[in-house]
Length: 537
Image (cartoon, rainbow, N blue to C red):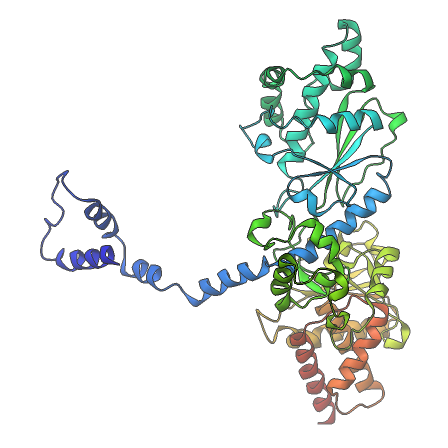
């Protein structure tokens, strides 16, 4: 503040005196700073002194969205994916969790390892002599492969640099070290699948691949400086290591007997985002803002909670309302809550009209797939919408999307990049922003959306109503269409809130993950009563 006052005084006097800042080397630091700041405009100074409400709201929103509630639910969803892989496609391999983020995602029996992403950063590629992870190499060699789990907080990258580059460099170093114990002829034949240096993923540019391979000699020098005895590993490693990358989008089938290498399956727990702050439904039915790599940087959000404590209080933590999660974690860490049995199960909350047991949603997700991964939920005929389905924007990424319905209606903010274009399919985008951004957007979207839905009903066509997340706007529009059908067919004069709840409950029977926000339902209530009044008039 004193420096700023000095600046303002000097700026006022500068109009009358151009020699306030003479060319001299004797100025103090404050003088130099003031001279630099003097060029600032009044608007810039005012903005720095009084940040806008918009900027403050954005900062608060960013802080809230990264809270423990959203992170724990994000971790739970990603853990379920890892568990499915650990007990399914990759069940024959031992599993390792990469510190630190990976430890939040893998099963309790998984072992630990430590591959740093910084060792794979561009122009910083290196082999760490302090993090040999020799136990990983020995276990993978003896079991014919292994799985390494990690995650990334990036909204762009699917795999952290630890999995994309650090592990491939590490694998190549151990391959070459083992080959060095063999005769030249045997080494040449054994290294054939890995002779070109670190085997890197296809999304790494050729220029970066060549730069990494040019450092192979320095990687080997770092390894040899440790003087690690590689002979026990060379004795059991039948085939050289090679990395295989697995994600939600791609899950390779690894037949150990049919390949000429020992697979290191690098599994990322992070799911793709369609947009920042994308809301999803957790494994217990609660809605949350998905955060990729939520387990990372635990010091900033976990409040002392560890993966082990999370396991012990898993159901209780996921059942807490957002406002109580932080205090509940504090009680767990302080020992006030020692066992899950001390938590009242009645604290679990559920939205009105969506009181389905969480096990119903879990069973449907297991059988039909998750709504945010592109699965659909077909509504029962007693909803009055004929052959109608609800889905998220991810459904448009499916190769068989044109077989799902004849008429697609997307009610949301995100633009569908590849709408169904097959003959016989029609697609309509009714723009509707989230309630917090526009409190009347969904109300305005109801009439055009209903027009297309009823046109499909009259033509006896299959309909698919989608929205950005598949649980909010699409469900609200389905409720509106179902009740509007009553207004026209049975002459309902007024729509009350109980009718909306009852119809939402009926739709939730087919779509247990349905979680329209309170603001969305309010807009539906207003739109339906406007339709009813117009019919009376």
